[in-house]
Structure formats: C-alpha cells, structure tokens
Image (tube, rainbow, N blue to C red; front, side, top):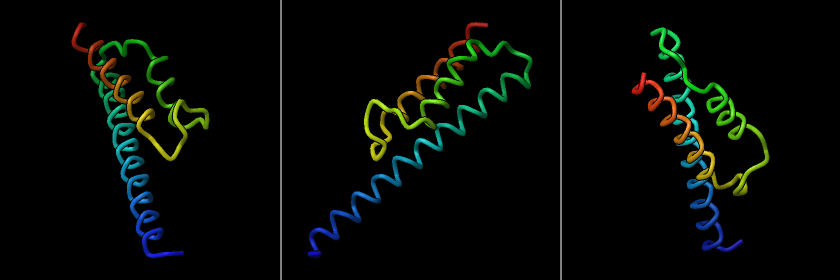
Length: 90
C-alpha cells in the first residue's frame, strides 16, 4: 500500500471516530435531558421521540451508511430539541 493510500485511510478513520464521538456526546446529552425532566417532575413530552432517536442510533438500518454518522447525529439533535421545546412550553 502506498503512503498516499495510508494517509487517506488514516484521515478516513479519524473522521469516522470524530463523528462517532459527536453522536455519543449528543446521545449522552439526550439521556441527561430526559433524566432531568423526570427528576424535576416536568412532563417529558413525547417519549416515543426519545426512544426512536436511540433506536435509530443503535439499529443497523440508516439513511446513510454507518461510516457516516451525520444522519444519526441529526436525529439525536432533533430529539434533544424536541425535549427542550416540550420543557419550555410547559
């Protein structure tokens, strides 16, 4: 394998790891937001949004193949925004 191919491989691996780290970070924030809503006694809004986002991250079926986690991150961010919107309204 040439040096150029190794460089491309290393860059691709770094990008995959970085996007996976962002997806995990957003998932942790989503879980913490849901836990905070429960602890405060506030209505959680639509629980199916939370579970659908978690299932989308875990299940192998994606809109974009798994090496690119941008769709997973987008779904988690939308779920997090949904939880915040429901909390602000009540």
